[in-house]
Length: 246
Image 1: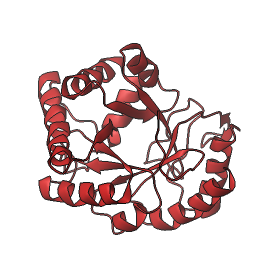
Image 2 (image 1 turned 180 degrees about the vertical axis):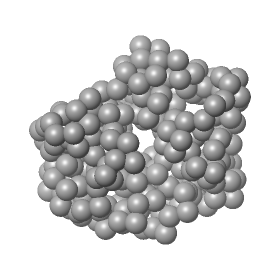
Image 3 (image 1 turned 180 degrees about the horizontal axis):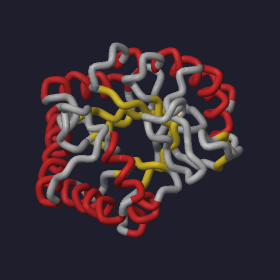
C-alpha cells in the first residue's frame, strides 16, 4: 500500500487537530495526518481546517476517534456500553469522512486515540468492536495500530488493511506495548533518544525498553505526537534521519 508522498523509507504520521501550535508546519514534514474528530477534542470547524491543510500538503488523511471523553482528553478508559461506544466511534468517523467528501479529499485510514488505542491493541472484544465500526463506515479504510499487537493480527484476519505503527517519542515495554504515560520516561523529550529509536526501528534493530530490556519493532509508519511541545523540533530532525536512510 502506498503510504508515503515524500520518498521516506517509512511513513511518518502525527496526531493533529488537537490544539497544537504546529499543525501547519508539521504537515510539511509528515506523510500521514491523524485528525481528531470530536471524541477527545475537535469539532466540524477544526476538522475542516485541518483536512484542507492536509489535502493541500498531499498527506494521507486519517480519522483519529476516541472514547467520548473530553474531560480527560481520551487518555483514560471509561465505563461505556458497547452500543454507546459503537455509535460514538461510528459518528466520529462519519463526520470527518463527510468533511473529506465535501472537498474531494480521501479518508485513508483510522487510528484510534489514547486509551482506546492502547486498550483496543490488546483487548479482543474492544478490537472487534473497532473493526466492526470501521467496516460499517467503509471497509476500504485502513486501520493504523500498534505494530505487532494482537489487534494488528486480528484486523488482518477480518479483512482490513493494517498500517503497523511505531513511536518516535514514546518508550516501550518488554511486551512490545507502549509504556503508560504515568511512568517516568514514557514520553521521550530528548531529541537524541527519539532519533536513536527511529534509526533502530527503520533498520530493524532492537530498541531499549523502559523496563530494562529490548524489543524488536517492525513497522510501516512512525508516529510523532502533534501535541508534544517538542513535536516540530523532533519532526525536523527525524526528517533528516529519514532522508539519510533512503
